[in-house]
Image (cartoon, rainbow, N blue to C red; front, top):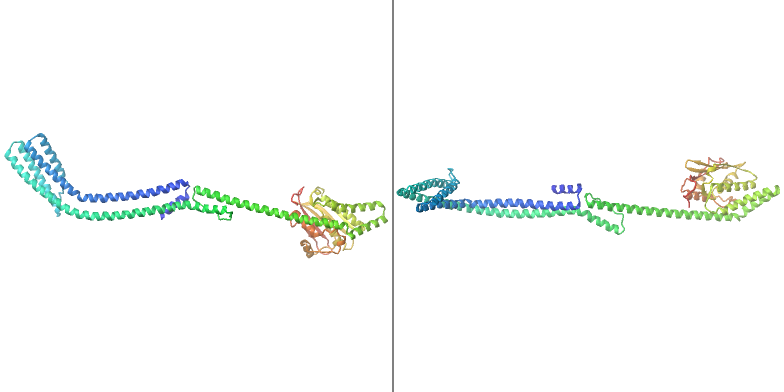
Length: 505
């Protein structure tokens, strides 16, 4: 298990190609099989060596008996033929026999096997001495001696053969028992080898499946996520892979693609929401504008407005000459002309100020100059754009609800100035003022007062407030300030500081 964890850790934390990982798994499996085969081969060779060793001593005793027979035969040949070749064969066979005799035990122990080997060594030495004496007597042509020596050598030969056969039989009996034991052990070893082979095979399969599963599992998950994406489900959990190979590269690319698609969908949704909001604002602006135009058209035929206007013109005609009457009528006509000509939503500050001038002139004719109007305008701001029909309704509201309800001369101060990044238009009167509660109701569009509706052009302050909010996209674009009762009221409009306003409908 530790080896398996280390292998997985190595694969997951070192940069490898997928081919290298699969090749590494194959090499690992082959190494395990090779090690197993090597262990089994060493075991089998060891067991085979032990089995062969069982009968090796019997083989050596048989070879020793054959070597002894060669010595005896070479003596017989030399005695019968007395040739150089036969003499050389004798010495060669003696030398070979002596080498084999030297391998026998020379220790004095209580074991029968060791005693018999020592006896064979001693008898072999005496036998070789007799054969040498026989050869020497033959070469000296001493017939009596070589026959006597040969008979003694032959007798010793028989003794040695008897000992060798007896030792061989004893050794064979003992080795047979050892062979049975070794055969049983060999069968047990075969069973162990089979078990080891099965265990190694199962281990190789487990390691291979584990390692390949570690590499293939991310691909399987990736395929499942790809199916979800193909069905249109992009709200899926991103796959984290630390395989440091091509699979990690593909997975990271897939995750990046999902994030990009999510961002794209979110952007599309936001764009649609903005577009929808823009359309809604456009519809509101259009509705308010239509309402304002309708009320202006209604104001053109409003009986009270026309009656008061014409009555004031008649009074002026009686008191003054026709030039002042013309000026009055001209200003009145300019007011009506503006309501018709400026039906567009966007105008300049200069247009709105001119309308206020005409309106104040008409009011002062009607109210005998009781309204004192003052302007303080930064002329560099006259071309700033703003919604139409904004200033005149506010001035009208100052007159109807502020100045007319007070004693003394009414004062209206209109200022246009720049403050920070905003264009400010301030309309301030010295009228009866407004309470905080009334201001809050006006700003929320909850305040209604129809007392002087007959003298109005029909455009309410709530309409002005809503159109300013829509135009500037700023809930703080219009402010109403008052310090309290009989302390006057100030209305402040805030426009963006741009030469040409682009953020309008």
